[in-house]
Image (cartoon, rainbow, N blue to C red):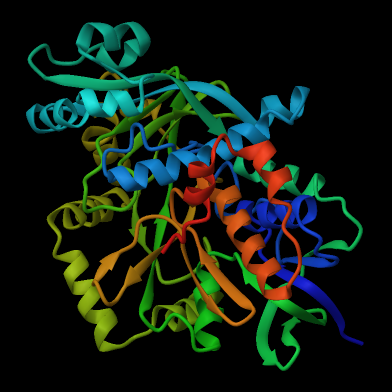
Length: 451
C-alpha cells in the first residue's frame, strides 16, 4: 500500500540532506521521505570527488559582483551551522585553511591587479594582494625554483575554509531527528507520475506518494524534469573531473586565475581535509556521455537529459567556439592519455603552481574525481554558473554544478519555503533568522531565485 508523505526528497547529497535538515528544524511539515540510491554524501558531495572548498567569492576571479554577494551569503550559512558542531565532528567536517588565487605571467598579473582594487578590498577586507617575496613566506613551494623573470602575484586570505561535504550531508541527516522523517538508502527512483493529490514516485523497491517532491539528484534531476515536460530550454553537458596528488608541498589552497567565460575553476592545488600528508591537483576536464563516474548504463538518461535537437547543437557549437573553453578541452584531451597525459598535465598546469615538482612525484588519484552536470541555457546558448532550479505545481528540480555545494543550506531554505507555501504549512522564520541571518538583507539574498 502506498504511503503518502508531505514531502519527498530525491537525492542524499549535501543539498538534499540540507533540505531535510531545514524541513525538520524550521517547519511544521509532518512527514518527509528522503530517497538515495547509493549512500548519504556520495557522488559529487564526496570529499574525493570535489576540491573541498567553501566558495565565498573572494578568490573566484570569474564571478560577477552579484554572484560574489550571493555566493558569500550562502556559504556563510555553512560556517554558522559549523558553530553548532562539537569536537571531532566539527574538526572533520569544517576546517580553516589559508588560500590564494595565483596569477602567473603578465596577463594574469594585470587581471589580479585590476580586480583586487580598493572597492574589492572593501568588500573582502581579509584579502591581501602580495608579490613574490610575500608569497614565498606563506607558500614557499610556489616560489621555490621559479624563473626569476616570471611575474607572479597572489590575492591571499588566511580566513578560508575547507569542507568535507559528504560528512556535512551526514551531519544534516543526523540533526534531522523529528518524528515523521524517514531516510531510505539503496532505493533508486525509476519514474515519477503526476496524480490529483501529488506525485507517485516509483523506485526499484516500492512506490511512494508525495504531496510535494524535490529532486536534488544532479544530472538525473534534469532527466526526470524532462520526463514531466519541464526544462525544455535547458540541456546538459557532463564534465568529468579527475585529480592527481603528490606528497604535501602546499600549506593551503592555491587556485589559478579562472577565465570569465568558463563556469568552473581552473586547476588548483589543495591540502586534503582527510589526508594531511598529500597535496591534490586538479580537476582535469573531460566531456563524458554519462551521468555518473564509470556508470555507462546512465548514458541513455544522459542523452535524454541533454536533448538532441537543433538548439542543443547550436549551443554546443557556440560554447566550443569560445577560445578559453577550446583551450581547456584541447589540453585535457592530451591530459587523458595514459602516462603522456601526466607529463603534460605536470608541465602545463602543476608546475605553474609548484615549479619544482617532477614527473615521479605525481600520482593519479584513482579513487577520486567525479561527474559535474554543467547546465546549458539553450536560449542564451551558454553554460550556466552555479545552481539551476526549475519546476511547477508541487515539484522542484535542482541541478548544482560548482559552487553548488557551498550553497546547500541556501537551496535547502528555498525549497523548504516552496514546500510550506504550497502545502499551506508554517515556516518558522524567527527561529531560522536567529540561527542564520545577521540582517534582513541577508535573508532577501538567500531567498532570491537562483536561476
